[in-house]
Structure formats: structure tokens, C-alpha cells
Length: 188
Image (cartoon, rainbow, N blue to C red):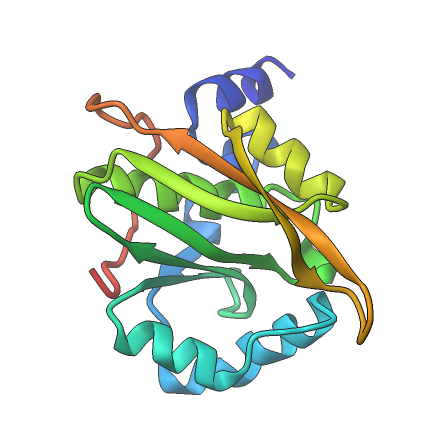
């Protein structure tokens, strides 16, 4: 429990509090062969998932996408970050339903924050569904604060929509304590 508290406070990789070996998880940029698995997770996770076109357009525009794979090379989650002028926008952070609540979202977030800092970005922005309590709890524990609201931003069905909370994390100019061991540079 102490290690878990230190992990939250200092932003170290979430795997440490679970006792998982550092070599168990791989992080890398996607390959063309990865997108079937990415889309499978996306469809399982959202009522209005991103399409292959969304992912390709994001990569074509220079956005940073990173995959998290287990020791067998199976995809457990991914993130997509849009860089900007001294800021970045976390567009998508998704973990496979079968792998949730195991620290993967936190680990992907750690790495997105580290990369944003490495690129000189001072703020990391994101939107989250107002009803997504698990994600909101993760972002709150990480230090994100609400900076705005986008009414009716997310579709629920053909007639209803859900508000998005606009959250931001200020990234000071200090070194990030998260480990980068084993990091494979992707779309930088």
C-alpha cells in the first residue's frame, strides 16, 4: 500500500505496485498489423468508437500513438496524443475491458505525461465523459483539474448526448520521475 501511495504521488509506473516485473510490459508505436487488435478494443469499449480512418488520420497528422502490450505481445491498451504549441491533448486512452483496473491506464498516462514534458509541452488537456466515474477518478488522482465543460459533446444514442468535462494537467519544467526504461520511441 505504501508503494501504491508513492506511485500515485510521484507518477511512477503503475506496474510497480502490482509486483509485475519491469520487463513484462512493452510500449511501442503501432505497426500496420496492430490495428485489428486496436479496433477490437475500441469497439468493445465505446458506443461510438474511433474508426481505422481516425487512427490513420491521427498518425498522418503527426499525433503520438503508443501501444501497451503484455509479455506475450498481446495489446492491452493504447493512447493517442495530439501535440500543440507548448501543450498536448490526450485524445484517446483506452484499455481492453478484460485488462481494466490493473494499472494499465495509469501506466499509459504516465508515459503520455513523460513524453509531453520531453517535448516541452506545458499542459496536457483531455475531455472525459461526465458519467465516466472510473476515468474521472484516475485523472483527479493524477492531478488533473476541471477547466471547462462541453455540453452535449459525446453521443449516447441517436437522440441523447452527454457532457464532456475539460480537464488539464499543468506540466512544470522539472524532470518527470516516471521510469522510461524499455521505452521504444514511436511517432515523436
